[in-house]
Each structure stands twice: as structure tokens, then as C-alpha cells.
Amino acid sequence: MAHLVWDWNGTLLDDLTLVVEATNACLALFGGGPTTAEEHRREFCRPVSAYYEVALGRAVDAADFARLDRLFHETYSAGLAACALAADAHHALTGWPGTQSLLSMWFHDRLVPTIDRYGLAGYFVRVDGLRAQIGGGSKTPHLVSHLSALGLDGADCVLVGDSVDDAEAAEAVGAGCVLYSGGFTDIDRLRATGRPVAHTLTEAVRLAQAITPAEPASARE
Image (cartoon, rainbow, N blue to C red; front, side, top):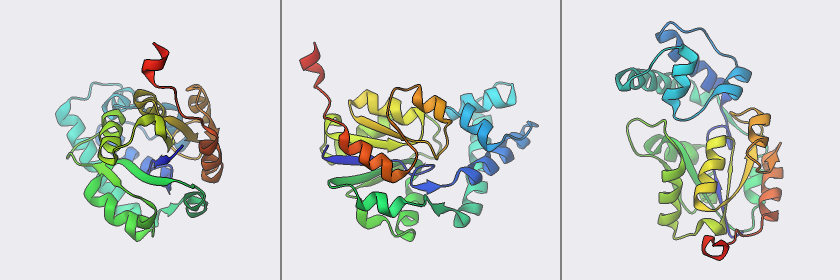
């Protein structure tokens, strides 16, 4: 494979504890009880509004979700400075022989300076985050746009992420995918996607290098 697309939250950045803290602030806003890291790893899904509906046991309309999303990001931003990179992030990034980029569902204007602050900007030929004011949806259209901007076909890429949504986005564009078990998603849910699962980012890079290019859809018809 020529190109590796990295996920940010829960993959290169070890921020699960902060995400759970911010999620609990949101649940409390509507009278819900707190979740734990393991519960979050088993239950979190996209669209994020659907997760809140299950966790709160009530419907969440657009206005509700806007309040939840605003509080989540306020709480998250307040604690971000305490988050570290995954233990082997730099080692993994230096281990990939081709080009690399980063695609996150976090706000682009906050993502770019944060990547630079962690000393990672030089690894990536492109960094894309969420450019809308409210997110919470599927990663698929964002991955389509990311690869289009790079002039790359999905079959020439591998995505490394930590969620079922990452696997679904990779599937949609015909890309390879390796899922990291140290992030936001329970390992059994990751294994159920049928994609290879790595316990470290270094292992993820090794598995990504072993993925052969996908056969073009036209050749399978």
C-alpha cells in the first residue's frame, strides 16, 4: 500500500479518559447517569445523537444535540492539555514507508495547531478535521473528500482507526483498514468487523503493510 490515513482521537491521541469525562458532563445535563470507559467502549456509536438517545433513554432533537455537542467540546477542550499521545505514536509514524495523512472528526481549526503542538505535523502530507460547526455523523463522506483532495484511490490506501465507523468508511471507499484496540471501542466490536485488530500502533503499521491492494470493483463484476 502506498498511503496510510490515520485517525486522531482514540488512535494517535490517548484521550479516552477525557472523552468519558466530557460525555458524562453531557449526560448529566439531561439528568442521565454517568458512563464508564468500558461501557463507553461497548456502547458508543455514530451518529452521536443516536448514542445519546440510548444512553439517556429519550429522544434527542437537533436543539438538544447542539447543546450536548457544545458542552462536550467545552469540557473536552478544558482538559486536552493533560492528554498524551499513544505510547508508540512516534515510533509507529516513523515505521510506515509510504506517505501518510490524518483525518479526524474533531474541528479542523483546533486540530491543526494541536497536531503541531504534539510535534506531528511533519509526518503528514495532509491533515483534515471537521469544518462544520456540529458533527457527529459518519466518517465516510469525510474520507471520500480527504482522498479526493489527495488525488488517491481508496484501493491504494489503508486507514488506521479505533472504531467501527472507521471500518465502515474504509469499506465504502475500498480501502484497507486496521483497527486499534487501545481506543474508543471494545475489542469484540472491532473483531466483529472482520478487519485486522492491533494492540499497539506499531503493530497496526506492520499489519497495514501486509494488506494487499483491493481489487477494483469493476474487476469483480
